[in-house]
Length: 130
Image (cartoon, rainbow, N blue to C red; front, side):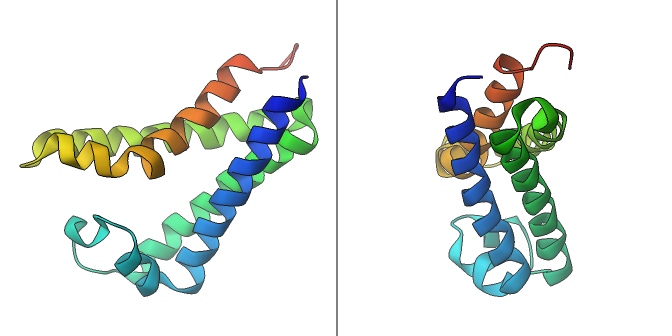
């Protein structure tokens, strides 16, 4: 394994951990702070915490891959699958909205790039025998 992939996975794990922790600890603050989220519907603290828990699980998979790539790859790949499906939902919602390009632009870093990086790592860095 090369070092860049592990470093990138570790960085993504830290960012997703921070996001998930914020969603769990301060769901209303997270809801109000993230651009576009209030437009998705009324605040639901249970839902925000559920998604926060999923972000923490994705972070654990990325962190495990960063620590032990061969053993952690399946967990990272599963997290990448969820993040990719989440991004697909955002694409669908954007295409059904009044301003699809603005929605895609707004979500580019936090949703699409956050899904693309783990997906690319999972596809390009699959260990032999996994």
